[in-house]
Length: 491
Image (cartoon, rainbow, N blue to C red; front, side, top):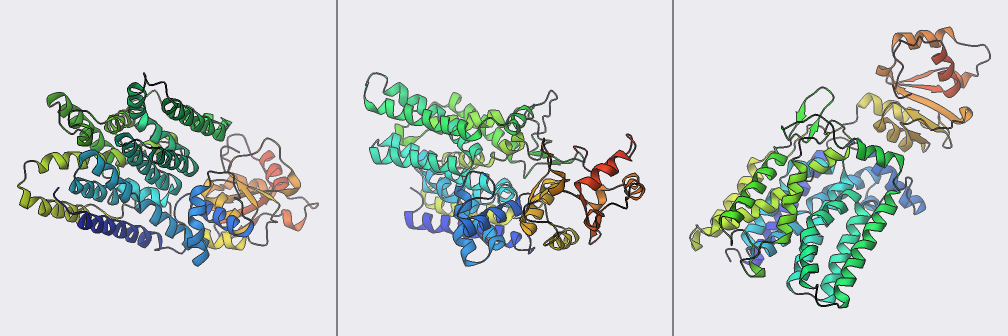
């Protein structure tokens, strides 16, 4: 082994500190929450501290993870601390997993550094925190699964299932990724125990089936979930392997991590066919292909499909491609272990140190593309809503980010979609000033009624937000021509 356990541990800890500092420094550049769902996390954690339950139904683990940080600071800073720590912590299971796959600590250290410097992992810490923390647990489950396969015991099996359960409680997509990558390993276990007829196979099958049912029941196959699945693929093909296509057509690649992971998957598969013992799990005999690596190859095949619809910012396809840094880190560690075989023993520690230093210094540490930052004028306008909108009201907004911002300041329920049934007396419409065009303002002027109450008159906050009662909004709509653009097309 080229690196001592103590040195490897300190280097991995250093990667965690580096990743945490980079993430938290970026998140702290603004006093407001960062990301399209930044206020959503603050709302959830505040609700846990005040009432002990979530404001919105959701997988609860990540919000409880943020509670201690919030108790020491406040909901906004606590969310940022929890996001930075939870996503940076992926270096620990990445090291353990690669260490078990290669029986080489240096390879584990390099793989951990790849995960620490990942642009996708950084983006998850700003936009999709639950998924970022959930993927850390995914790698932890896979490392525990390998340990249970090497030396089966009730304790090791329970640890693996426990981590899988925590993954489910953190994020459903992370749980699905864990099942996909573990599928070849579970198939191998079932094949090995096919003649035993003991409690082992039944226990594992029952546990996986039960967790799968919990996952399905938790999703409830709601209309929103079905729409999410229907938008995952499209008829057109896109071979650029972009992670996200913005509304203006710009493609975000996040250091081309999807492309790099797909390329390394091809290299791994090629080495397997060319050299039977290459990049194998040495702890399983040296000639046997690792089932977990096979699972990561399957994941890369899914991520590289050119029919994935990555134009939807909230879609499943983009969320899937944001997992490419997992196989990228694992494959990098595997290939680094292969490379070390051609390096003299005395030089291996130096090569490992140089590789980690290069990753930490050369890879961009703060890729800002695609991150939603709160605009000062909108934040000021949202603060002015406090006390204007009753806490029991329903606010319909033009965008998701504005909805969470409104709920944070007013404690009223805010949403982008229009419910099937509306109670006009307690419903408001809130829109960005930029979304209101001339014909709509003309309609408001033409339909003013002497019977309107003062609160029904449109109110403008900081020249950024416009608030209307439902009655005012509906009457104005009737005075706007069908060809005129209304704020919020889905309205």
